[in-house]
Length: 493
Ligand code: GAL
Image 1 (spheres, rainbow, N blue to C red):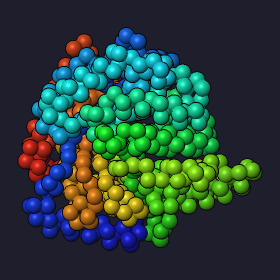
Image 2: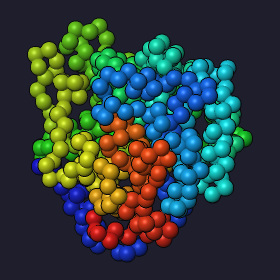
Image 3: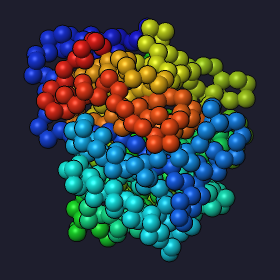
């Protein structure tokens, strides 16, 4: 049962939906709609010419049983060779922009900025040419999880050396592409990198370093993001006049019990505030609630200091304000409730919470992903409550299918989430400027391999031509984009 506040808000939300007039589902003027991918998930050509090895190359080649279908991204959707075809898919959809990421080791084969690959640089220029010809704006993510294996051997994001190394790479990117790219995102989903790559070990680099390792990773990612931002700001912004931000994801968290007024916020601060607060709040630094829980827990467990590292005053100031826009990825919601700590700890897992799904929330092929459109609305409202009217770009939203072309569930999902977003904009004044479907085409879905397919376009991975075919959602979405009017899909949500 939700608490009263939530009930009231949900009621208000549904009343506002019922009473919404037709115009309410028209997108605001200047609103941008696009589709996203990332380099490792679609490009393939993992060792073409001088490309260096990334952590994802190493992780998938290790054949350790950690990729569900034993696959890898060696060829993936082969977009390295088929990017022109992909731009035509974007054209067919009529999107305003394409969000894609750059492969660090394709551009800098050794990882270091002194050796720049001609082939790598040219590939992204060719892609940018093609986008330009078709009047599609590039939204460029500088880093979507595939850092150089060499730097991982030196500790990866557990090492502060990455701050300079990432900054050097970002500078090469701005210098090469900044005259033609007006939207940069530094890092995709830092929390997924640290939680799944350094704590759970289910994504590259596959480490289980405990919560301390996870927090050190977060600390270094925040510093690296800020370094890239300052480089852009000081060396490039005046001539290039673009925008730069970070991409953070969050589920929404609903307290399971009506009298629990705390858990919802604690969960949100642990997942989202940990990254957003240092950058977007007035005071900077990590949110107090998470600092307090982690410090108390660390003390109780006999540690000499909190396992959440401390930012010096200089770093707090250096990180604060380092985003022109917030890139926000959202898919799913959880119910949360407190659990009693064991005799070894006060707050189990530092947050002291258990996460479950309400059985009423519709399932999707992805076990962690349930359909809860109000979660997007509640996130956007909470972002506004916490950080004011910052510009929000929804940089990912979507669900998987299992290979069918009749993706009725996807249409219903996209429709209901976009409706929630438009409600956030029109009823609650949230400053959302863009919406992005994940993903343009089926791709390598990390540890789930090719089993979960998030594409608007189906890709035949058994065919060497990697044939792309539109799913049923394509004509519907194309019409929404063309008319700027969110009409329900024919089959209904
Ligand atoms: C996001 C990630 C994407 C994609 C998506 C679907 O967390 O940024 O790369 O995999 O999830 O699971």
